[in-house]
Length: 199
Image (cartoon, rainbow, N blue to C red; front, side, top):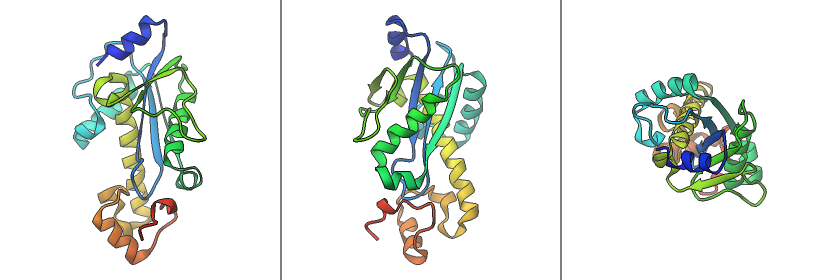
C-alpha cells in the first residue's frame, strides 16, 4: 500500500497526499473529497477502499486517520455547483479544495482514478493518477474513508431536514425507492436537477 508514496518520495517529494472523492453518482447532495498525508508506513488495520470496509470499521478508521495523519482535509461542492458545472468538473473542484487547505501543504498528490481534469477544472498540484488507487495506496484509501464517512454523515443530517426522501437509507443514490419518492414528492433543494432528467 506504500509503493506509490515511496515512488514519489524517491523523486524528491516530501509531503505526498492521497486524494479521493465520494458521492459522484447520487441524485442528491454534495460531492465530498478528502486529502490525507500519512506518515510513511503507518499501520492502520483494515484500511482499504471505503466501499470494501464495513460502516462500523469506517467510523473507527475515520477517527484514527484524523488522529494519526500528518495532515488531512475534507471539502465539498454543493448541488447547485454540480448543476452549473457538471459532475466531472466538480469532482476535480472538490479534490482541489481539499488539497488547498491541507496544513502543512502537500507538494505532490496521488489521485484515485484516471481523470485529472474536466472542461473547466483540473488538479493543480503535481500529481499521478492511479486506477483503483483506493485499493493500492494507503494515502488514497485514507482519503476515501474520510470522504465517504463525511458524506454519509451529511446525508444523515439531510434526512432529518427532508425525512420524506429516506436519505438515511440510500444516501441520495439512484435506487428504485429513491425514484419512487421523487415521483411522489418532487425534488427538494438538495437534489441535483441535472441528474433528474429521467423523471
